[in-house]
Amino acid sequence: MKTKRGRGVSYAKYGYLFILPFFIVYIFFTLIPQLMTFYYSLFENYRDGLTQVGPNFVGLKNYVTLFSPDNTGSIGILKYFGNTLILWVMGAVPQIVIALLLAVFFTSYRMNLKGQQFFKTVIYMPNLIMAAAFAMLFSTLFSNVGPVKQILLAHDLIDKSFDFLTMKIPVRVLIALMNFLMWFGNTTILLMAGIQGIDQNMFEAAEIDGANSLQVFFRVTLPLLAPILVYTVITAMIGGLQMFDVPQVLTNGKGTPNRASMTMVMYLNNYLTTSKNYGMAGAVSVVLFLVSTGLSLFVYNSLSSQYKDTDRKRDQI
Image (cartoon, rainbow, N blue to C red; front, top):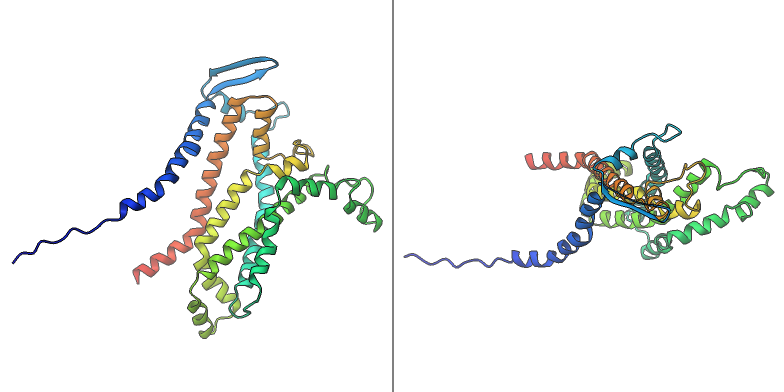
């Protein structure tokens, strides 16, 4: 006797309905503006005094100009990209390393620290301060009449000619320090959440097998934390490439000394506010987007390769 099989209920359509608002917002507020930016980068559109030139279609001329040497023989966009990369490495590498160590420290099942909520609040508080306000505070502290220089002078550690805000290395160190202080708390909380999501039985099994703390960290914690760590590094890198407010305020938008702290977004902002060259600004935006995408893919493939190999070996077993 044949029985009629009932049709199963599919709830997939409800899932699509829930994620539909995200795609609508993304299309109208991210994808379309990105396509329009690329479109406008193909036009000559700027102000010459009170005269508006363009928009005139010039093809890839803006990109050729962007990568052409200036009067000094240097290519500006490459110099500013190098500045941005150096400032990001100086701030992000210590940020991720220290955040990872703090996350392991706070979530250690052996130490079982009390008051984790308090520590989370304290380390996250610098992230609540506006970057511009943070930069103004450091500008005041490290100025020629600021307390930091006066203390160092009083102890004969520097001479009067030393100026934190007009010297290449001190300016870069201050920018990296501010970015570190503002973001290491957020990174620590993300990594703590990732570690707390790992099954504690894994740590107990490793301890029973005789593994020490370093072996547990490198063979259990890091491999299982890889997805969160990859996400953290990529988001930190994208944020670093878009660095703007801290060096802008600290150097009054000049990137002193000798544009050694001029970042890519500061360079982009100069085209928008000074020369009103929207075509060149669009070209810089497109280049910045392509660089961010390429570096993100490189970092993702580099950091997640070990994680993928572990999954592949597990599947084969």
